[in-house]
Length: 163
Image 1 (cartoon, rainbow, N blue to C red):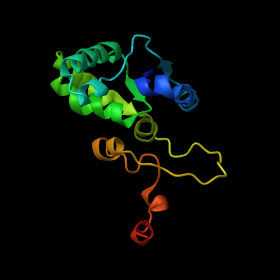
Image 2 (image 1 turned 60 degrees about the vertical axis):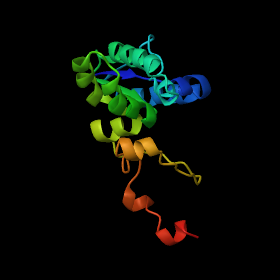
Image 3 (image 1 turned 90 degrees about the vertical axis):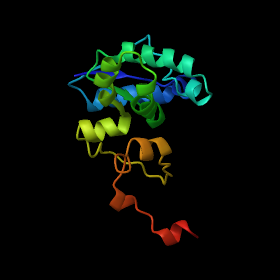
Image 4 (image 1 turned 120 degrees about the vertical axis):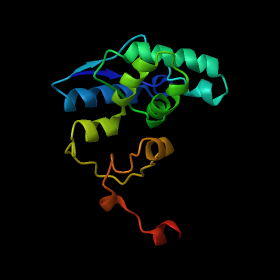
């Protein structure tokens, strides 16, 4: 399997360690796959579309489809960018057949590992308490409520949330 790693613009500029960690994680958990970082990749276009610049976003969307069409999967550490590709490119991309073939192969990292690779645990321990923010795009647009954790194990009773 050829997996393209899509690193969103904000990860590239603000959190490059996340991009490097994503690559290492994919290499470790998908040893039978070729992980490729297409050097011509750019932003998904969401900032431009959100700002009302549909023409700039259209160009970026077409570039994304051209850049990533030759891969079995495209994986990104960003639910919002994946949601942009899956839910907003249909109105932006000129080659609808290329887009229709690509869209179902674009995944957020946890979604890809759990739903496509069947990974349920990576072992190890982290002996500290952490908070988990379930992002809106992952929950609402990608239906990821259970991809990164089990709902049974992480369910918080309403009386605790409402205190």
